[in-house]
Image (cartoon, rainbow, N blue to C red):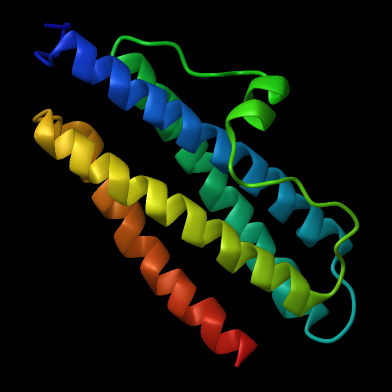
Length: 154
C-alpha cells in the first residue's frame, strides 16, 4: 500500500495513465494558446476570448493532474519531449481560421474524454476515489463544452 492506502501497482498504473493524460493536456494547452494568438477573421473577438478561457482552464487541469500523480506517489512528466512522446494529441502550427481551430479543440476534447473514461474505470477498480472524482468532474464539464462548441460550428 502507498501512503494514501492504495495498492502500489494499481497506483503506478493510474499514475502512468495520468501522465499520458497530462501529456495530452500540455499539447492541447499549447495548441489553444496558438489559436488564441493567431485566430483571424470572422468571430475573432469572440474566439480570442473563448480560447483564452479554455487555455486558462486547461492550465488549472494540468496542475491538478501533476499534483494527483504526486499524491499517488509517482513523478509527473515535466519535459516537452516526454509530452510529445506520450501524447495522442498532436501539436498544430499556423492554424488561424476559427472553425478549423474549433474543430481541433473538439477533436482534442474527444481524445481526453476517452482517456478520462478509461481512467474512471481503472480508478474505480482500484478504489481510488480521488482520481475518480477528478475524472468525473472533468468529463461532466467537458461534455457540456463539446455540446456548446459543436453548436457554434453549426
